[in-house]
Each structure stands twice: as C-alpha cells, then as structure tokens.
Image (tube, rainbow, N blue to C red; front, top):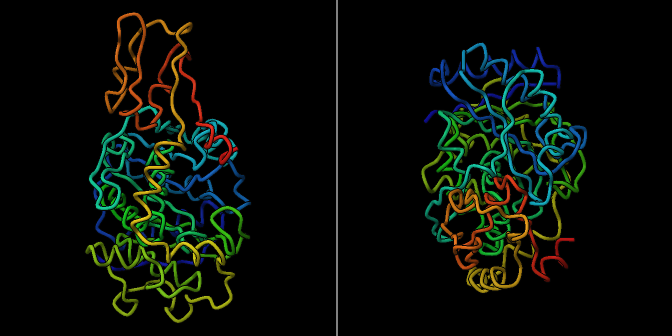
Length: 378
C-alpha cells in the first residue's frame, strides 16, 4: 500500500474542491469505476446543519459524486446510520444537506437499516454486526469529518466506518469496550472488513474541544486524501495537535499492518510536513482521561448489564400484524418465528438491528426501550 497522503488547501467551493480531489486521486492506483456501484460513506453523526461542523459537508460529497459520474460509475449511493437510533433518517439526510445533493445529482440515499446485517468476528466483542449493504456494492469511498473526540481523542478515517454498525449495536460495542484501547480494536476490525478504496477527509472546517458534537468549529482549510488509513489519520492527528502514537486507532491499525504510523516514512504531497502540526487546537478534557484507565475486564460485566437492562427492542403489535412474515424472512439472526396465530420474537437472539421494524409494511412493529434505557437516553 502506498503511504502517500495528499494535503491540499481547500474551501467549500465545489468546482475548486472537485479539481483538488481529482488531482489528489491521480496519485493513487485506483480501480476502474466504470459500470460499478459505489457507496460514499460520510460522517452523519446526527441531524445537524453543515455549519456546525459535526457532519461531512455536502459540498465535499457533491464534488466526489461528480468525479464518479465522470468516471462512469453505474450507481452511486450515500448513506450512514446516526448515533441516536431514534433519529428519523429522512430528517437526518435533509438537515445535513445530503438529500438536496442526492436529488440534484440523481443518486441514491440508502436506509442502511433495511439491508440486514453481516456478522464479523471480533477479538473484543465476539462478533460485530455490520450493515449487509457493504456487500452489495463494488467499492466504498470513506469521507470522514476531522474532529476531536471525547472518548477516542480523534474521529477520522478509521473511526468513520463505525457508522456501518446499525441500531443500538453501537451502544453494545461501547458497553463491551469501555476503555479507548479496546474500543480502538473494534474500530480497526470494522475498518478492515469495510476496506474503503480511498479515504477523503473533510478537514476544511473541523471541530476542536469537546467533539464529536459538543465542540467548536475550527477552520483547518484542508482536504486530505490517501489509501493508507493509518497514514491519513497520522496526518489528521497532527492537524489536531496530537502525536500520532497518542491515538489508539493509529497504533493498533499500524500493528495490524494496515498502514504506516511513522510520519518520516509517509510521503506528504501538497503541504510541508512541518506546517501540518497545530499547537493551539483545544483538546478534549474529561472523559478520555477517566476512561483510558478502566480495566478491560470490566467490559464483560458492563456488556452483561447492558444486554440485560439497557436495550431497545422491537415489539409486534398483534392487532396490526397481518402475518405476512416479512419480518421473519428479513431477520438476520432468525429471532422471529410464526407460531401459527402470531409472530414471536426470541429476545435472546434479537440483536436490535431493527430490520423487522424498518421493513414491516403494516407498521405493526414498534421500538421499545427498557426502563433503564428510557432514563439514560431520554
């Protein structure tokens, strides 16, 4: 893998941005996109307007779409799952500007909850459910937003693919991996499975302070491109004023052979290395320093408590159900069965992916939170 990282000065002006991304892509041996289905994965953490710097800016996404059209991609998709499972996806896409871009460019916004899941093996979590949609496209383009992060110090290239874990399974991953090092292992496992063909970081306006959503927008004025996810995140961590080895995802991904962590071995094009590091970025303060020293064994205890007491789960409303069995057929973990007058959910098998809820044509499945979850996630 090439450890080139392209760093260009950039603004949210589409034609200029498109030209810079196109030039950056020329440095890499990318596949032929002609006739292919390509999925663009932005960071859409929550329904927030682009000026808040919480989500990937729609101008970056639109520039990438136009480049893919010039390369004759057959179908282009945009999608993510928000951190809050109760967020309405249509509202999310509208507020973040993705819906307007998709309609103008005539590309597809996808509801990743409706595709079921594929489980991958995990050293920390046992298994991790990812949206099955990643198996239905030819290539994935990863387009994260550069931000500080109260738990991981930074969210960028490697962490962005965590959005492909649907439903409250995100919360389950956090419950299992309650210190940053173990959570970083999960993030690296996810990234390895997703395996984006290229990473393009929106670091034009990022976030400092208590990110990823409660911080302050910070203009970095950069668009960062690379195939090597570690090298891209090393450059990104320097922009945030961190030493690369301070970021657990950098260390763990490097040890797994995903890329280069030594800035001296990374070829940075378009910007002098000495000018990348920012000394004055406002860093995260409280939660990271508290959580990094939590013993790893606590994760198994927390996971048990989470799965038993803190969860969101589907409930079938019998009076609305017409026994079409779409829920049964769409359940990735075979947790729903027909018995023969009603549909039954086996909650020991249910992984809270909510495929049944999304696909029910009668809206006969509602989502309920446990009592403790209602108190914690109001």
